[in-house]
Image (cartoon, rainbow over all chains, first blue to last red; front, side, top):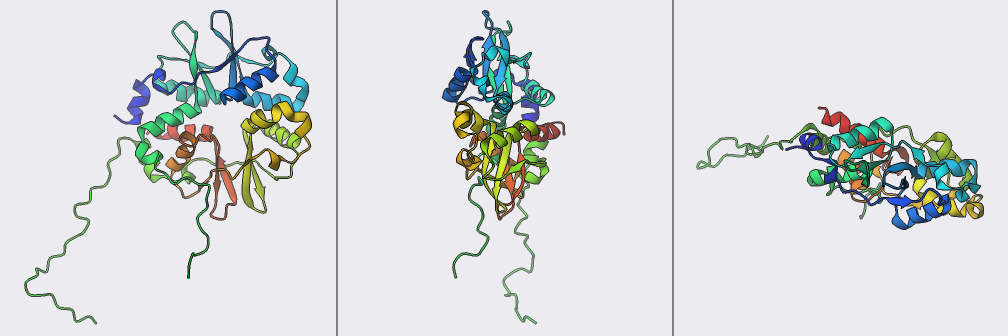
Length: 156
Length: 164
């Protein structure tokens, strides 16, 4: 079976989901940034008491806020989370991830279970890893840039 | 003119050295595209470029105003670094007051992994999936910036070929 079929038949749970950074509503952006740095993750999620996602704070929003008012880092995260962030169910086909990433133009997607509770985080990187897993012969053995080809001939 | 003679005991039958070659069969159009299409098949323009002595506050404004996640830093016509939302998060956000007037070269990611326009499209995916970089600069052989491949652009490439 090729990727075309897999992506329609396999479910989001087959992706390598990340454990998200979860913060309380009253936490400052400063403390949220510290948590995101520690977990090397570009977003944080705020949940309600039932583990239902209330919103997501992406690193792009941090850049936007800093460009307007650097003192914003001491404000509570609740004032700046993006509500109604797109979610996918863990049982949805992976094709839904592709659709959601493109239609919402976002980098991260919240993954929820059948009850709507937080189950993990995926996004563009997870999708790239999935493609790489399916086509290791094409993707993993590539020459990786970083050292340019020699422009001049070597040797005599 | 050559005067070469065929030995009497050798038949004069041409044997194609590729007669047993079987071209690779791809399972779907995406696999074929990954193997055969170059980086040029993925949209890599427009691109936002800045200079290494740009003040950090200005680079942050550029990211926000242009609504891009990554600036390529070019010096004397050569790619020298990238400055992205992730650099803002990791190095700038909590230190903004001390750093804002310093040059972006101090916090940019130096010597970024890049691809050439002629590399395979799979090379760009490899940088993202294996090396973990979300933005992949595209350069010519002299490292002059030609463009950038973002995850959104790769997603569009994947969709195009999955529909085939």
